[in-house]
Length: 51
Image 1: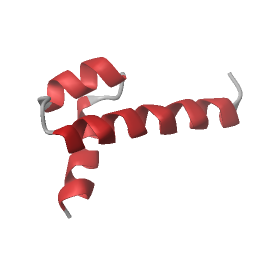
Image 2: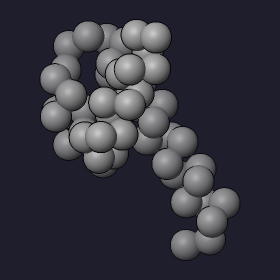
Image 3: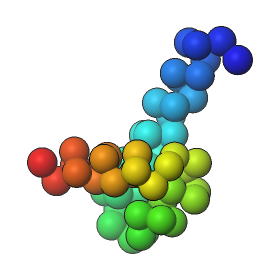
Image 4: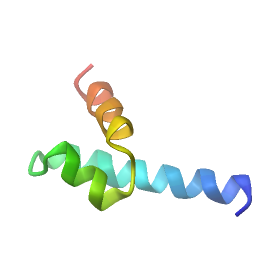
């Protein structure tokens, strides 16, 4: 897959994870499993949200 497409896919996954974090209904490991992001990426997004 070309770099631009991969970047767009990753950004979409981050947006999904951010919405899930904002909803406050999901554990970090659930967000990771559903979004396809690594647990470390989800934790980083969570830190950004609370910063």
